[in-house]
Each structure stands twice: as structure tokens, then as C-alpha cells.
Image 1 (cartoon, rainbow, N blue to C red):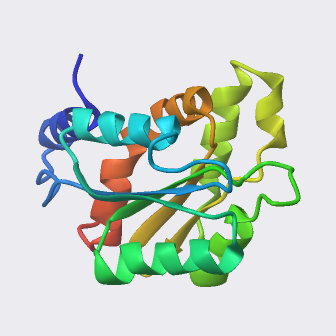
Image 2 (image 1 turned 180 degrees about the horizontal axis):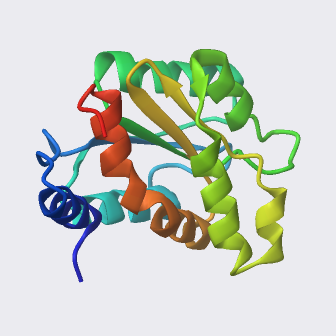
Length: 178
């Protein structure tokens, strides 16, 4: 089975378009008061899934469920590491400590609601609990920030729902057009 980068490349070639200019660069930020890198199975799974697509993982870190720390980690991933895509993992549910969407909104410029809607629609086919997600997808300049769930199972499912669109999103944000 072709990975998302291969599928996007084949689509572009079939439609007479130049292939995407570069391999997506991704940073993963797990937002949790209860997990360290050792216990972060969801973040580790995302690293493996991103690498399986042939994409580059620039960083994987764990920060506390703290709005300031999450925002600072997003800014570091975009401004310092130059990640095309930042995947946050956790903190998008209904717990009072879940502040990842708010932190994302604090440091990003533009909402990209279709990706968050696609994640929920994909997950609703699996569980009715998907409707409880407050996850966002936003742009910070030419960088995409996607809030994924904190459980490994849900993070994997949401990744599967959005990965086909990410190479095209990266290309568009880089000014490569449609």
C-alpha cells in the first residue's frame, strides 16, 4: 500500500503537476501532566507513523498541560525547528486541565477547520466519543498545527483520517499552489 507522500506524488504526476518540493518536516508535542517520554505511547506511535510515510520527525517532546508551555513548544517547533506540521497529542478533551486548543489558538494565526472536522468525522465512524473532542487545526504562518487526541488508539485513528491531505497542505503553505 502506498504511503501518503507516494499517493500525493502519483496524483500530482497524473494531473500534470510538479511533485511536492520537499518531504514534510514534523514535530510532535505531547501535552500531559501524567506522561513522561517513557510513558508516551501515543507520541511514540505518531513518530513511527510519520516516519512510515517517509517524512522527517524533527522533534518529539512532552510538556505539561499548561497553556504557556504548550504555546512555547509550538512556537519553538515552528519558528526554531521550522517544522511544516506540528502534531500536538493530548489535552483536547473536556478535562479542565485540557488546554491544548486554547494554547494553539494563542500562538496561531488562521483556523483550518476542515482538518479538525475531518478528524472528528473519521473518528465518529469508530466511537461516539469523538464528538467530545475540542481539537483544532490552525496555521502559524506557513506552518500547520494539528491537535490530536492523547490516547494512542485515538491518535492513530485521527492520523489515518488526515494524513492523505497533509502533503498538499504543506505544498500550499509553501506557496506551491494547487
